[in-house]
Image (tube, rainbow over all chains, first blue to last red; front, side, top):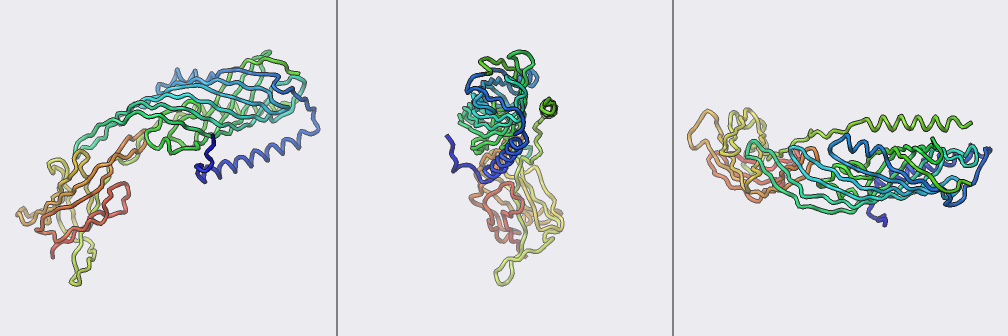
Length: 234
Length: 167
């Protein structure tokens, strides 16, 4: 799925630098927590499913995009969590120069590493950092444009619809806390960068669900998840 | 008790809320028209071209639909005009002396060009670039016009026309 030879040198440098930082942070954390109690979780014993409440709220507040995001994660090993996020959305651009709509599906796959040791068996409250590979299919509808020229006269025209496959990488960090038995809330922040930014050099969607503003090669985002957990937390 | 764990979580929550509250309204701040740029020159006796500053003392350049717009050029050797975005040629009229309306003071310059859409941004939409294919002109005050650069775009450092005036 990765087209490594197409990643621009700047993007590659940025991700290498951030990856080195995360690796160092993990090493530091491992060193400082060696004396504390370590509780090993069973592989794939506990699962969580959830929905991003912030996107539902935002979709009702702003009028230029709608998005829904879901999350499924599973404890993989002692301090690793496999995560899959997916969803869909649509957006529109409607200003005096441009008018078009777009919609997309997306999925993100990745892994999180928890930062703190468990305080007791079954303790699920923790902070994490993680990485994601995201990809999506984007449909952009027919676009109408207007070019205003008071000297020679205005021009209007149309650009035909188009479809794109896009993919991106993310770094994320966040916190999940169990506030009632098996009911969690989780929030995180994300930094994302397109692997194939040239796809959106012309008429980028106003908002790509799962990524954010498509006219930015590097985007920042956040989620506020409501989650339900099930399974064994041995 | 791992209270710093929850401290970290609360700090991150506040940071996320701060980020979420930031609005990112798109506002168009870029110029949406590009200009053809020209300079006035005189020809040396050895056939080389030399630039002379402030060459035109008081001239006019007419352009636009029906040539209803003009720039008055006083003590300058440079000018810029926009090209048509709705047709494939643009007429520019050069009046070498704005106080003299005799026919000999007027020259017409016609630029034949292709118009190319160029995407600026979501906030600004499109603009038109131009690819100049040919220049025709009359020779009352103008001796020769050299097409120095055929592509009219956002590059403000390029001069497209070198207009050599008669002495």
